[in-house]
Length: 68
Image (cartoon, rainbow, N blue to C red; front, side):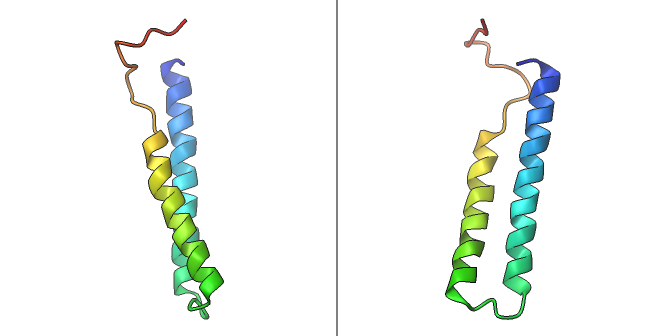
Protein backbone atom coordinates (compact mmCIF):
# COMPACT_ATOMS: atom_id res chain seq x y z
CA UNK A 1 0.00 0.00 0.00
CA UNK A 2 1.50 3.32 -0.98
CA UNK A 3 1.38 6.56 1.01
CA UNK A 4 -1.71 7.94 -0.80
CA UNK A 5 -3.67 4.75 -0.34
CA UNK A 6 -2.72 4.68 3.34
CA UNK A 7 -3.81 8.32 3.76
CA UNK A 8 -7.13 7.66 2.00
CA UNK A 9 -7.78 4.61 4.17
CA UNK A 10 -7.03 6.55 7.36
CA UNK A 11 -9.23 9.46 6.21
CA UNK A 12 -12.14 7.11 5.62
CA UNK A 13 -11.56 5.46 8.97
CA UNK A 14 -11.52 8.85 10.72
CA UNK A 15 -14.80 9.75 8.99
CA UNK A 16 -16.41 6.51 10.20
CA UNK A 17 -15.18 7.10 13.75
CA UNK A 18 -16.47 10.67 13.68
CA UNK A 19 -19.86 9.53 12.36
CA UNK A 20 -20.15 6.88 15.08
CA UNK A 21 -19.31 9.35 17.84
CA UNK A 22 -21.66 11.98 16.41
CA UNK A 23 -24.47 9.44 16.24
CA UNK A 24 -23.82 8.30 19.80
CA UNK A 25 -23.81 11.85 21.16
CA UNK A 26 -26.96 12.71 19.22
CA UNK A 27 -28.75 9.67 20.59
CA UNK A 28 -27.51 10.36 24.13
CA UNK A 29 -28.84 13.90 24.15
CA UNK A 30 -32.14 13.13 22.43
CA UNK A 31 -35.37 12.98 24.42
CA UNK A 32 -36.17 9.47 25.59
CA UNK A 33 -32.53 8.44 25.70
CA UNK A 34 -33.23 6.36 28.81
CA UNK A 35 -34.70 3.59 26.63
CA UNK A 36 -32.60 0.45 27.05
CA UNK A 37 -32.33 -0.11 23.29
CA UNK A 38 -31.05 3.43 22.75
CA UNK A 39 -28.53 3.03 25.56
CA UNK A 40 -27.31 -0.22 23.99
CA UNK A 41 -26.99 1.47 20.60
CA UNK A 42 -25.03 4.35 22.13
CA UNK A 43 -22.69 1.92 23.88
CA UNK A 44 -22.21 -0.02 20.64
CA UNK A 45 -21.38 3.14 18.69
CA UNK A 46 -18.83 4.22 21.29
CA UNK A 47 -17.29 0.74 21.30
CA UNK A 48 -17.08 0.77 17.51
CA UNK A 49 -15.37 4.16 17.52
CA UNK A 50 -12.84 3.08 20.14
CA UNK A 51 -12.01 -0.21 18.46
CA UNK A 52 -11.81 1.35 15.00
CA UNK A 53 -9.00 3.61 16.19
CA UNK A 54 -6.80 0.51 16.40
CA UNK A 55 -7.31 -0.09 12.67
CA UNK A 56 -5.48 3.10 11.65
CA UNK A 57 -2.38 2.47 9.60
CA UNK A 58 0.98 3.96 10.50
CA UNK A 59 2.17 6.76 8.26
CA UNK A 60 5.32 4.80 7.46
CA UNK A 61 5.33 1.08 6.72
CA UNK A 62 6.87 -1.29 9.23
CA UNK A 63 10.50 -1.78 8.12
CA UNK A 64 10.42 -5.41 9.24
CA UNK A 65 7.57 -6.18 6.86
CA UNK A 66 8.33 -6.09 3.16
CA UNK A 67 5.47 -5.73 0.72
CA UNK A 68 5.51 -8.11 -2.26
